[in-house]
Amino acid sequence: MTVTKIFNPVNRPSIFEKPNIINFLYEHLEQYGDSKEDIEKAIDFAIKELPSFGGFVIALYEEDILSGVVVVNQTGMKGYIPENILVYIAIHKDQRGKGLGKKLMLETIQQAHGNIALHVEPENPARILYEKVGFTSKYIEMRLIKNN
Image (cartoon, one colour):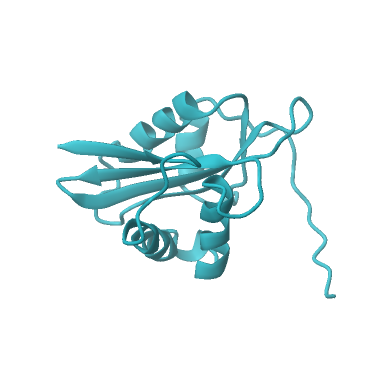
């Protein structure tokens, strides 16, 4: 049985759920992930534990086992910058290939108010899923990392 939990500024994860979500993303994002601190910050922005425009976190459970997570932050923008950025999405490595990624993406699209942007490495196999649910490549992102 699949259970979907949606966390946001009104319905925040419990003190037990939040660390589980952070650890899940840290483990299952694999080489495409970030530090636990950065993951926690994105979650805190989504649920407004830090000053932000908000967003949401979706946790997908299969038979009471955390099997997928997505984190979306609202940008406060519209038009030239999409209203939402999908910061993280991961499926448990033992649950991949069962359609859970598509299920999670469709729920994300339904929950988001406005357009959604995401960043994906060109070689990331998840790119195929994103294209299947309607994402297109509009720009190449470039970054300048300043060493302050």
